[in-house]
Image (cartoon, rainbow, N blue to C red; front, side):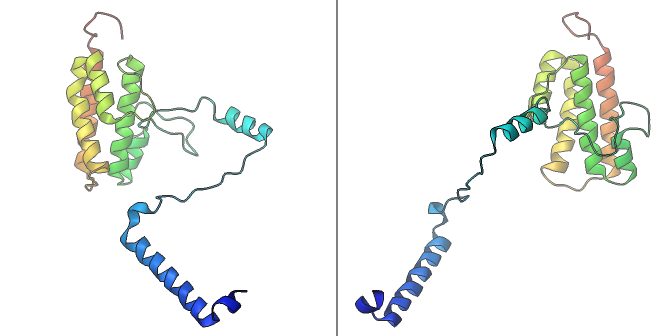
Amino acid sequence: MLGDVLPLPLAALLLVLAAGLTALAWYHHPAWVPRRLPRWRLRLPRWRRRRRADRSAGTTTAAVLPRPRAGDDAVPTGGPGSSVADRLAAEGRYAEAVRERLRDMVRRLAAAGAVTPRPGMTVTELTDAAARARPPVAPPLRAAGTIFTELWYAQRPAAAGHDRRMRELADDLDRALATPPPDGSSP
């Protein structure tokens, strides 16, 4: 077989040499290496696929809207000290409190009909959509989006001042939403 054609030490040397060349090519030329190796997926039986689809129906939410948490009956919508953001701020988790305050602001905008959040919408897209529908909400939303972006995308450390500013911006947003829309329709 192979030992009849090539001596065994030479075959071993050629295999080691081939492995070394492959390793060098892999290291120096990663562009030809696939980013993710193909994965074979196990096909579920039809009855399990149907059950999984039924379970996940109607669970689409916007990226900035809150997700239910274990132990929370509902996300509180008012009252000092009762919201998720207030609890996070009390624990010193200011970046998460800022995120929750922004989510609460988006919920208020959606309830007022100023914006219809879609899954995957960015803060900038939400701000632009809300500003087109209700121009007075643009300044507080842009400022809140800037704070959120600095903390979550630029990964700057969060402080109590960020949370305090987000509270002020949420109050400004409430005042802006209290004014009637420019077209005269009710909120």
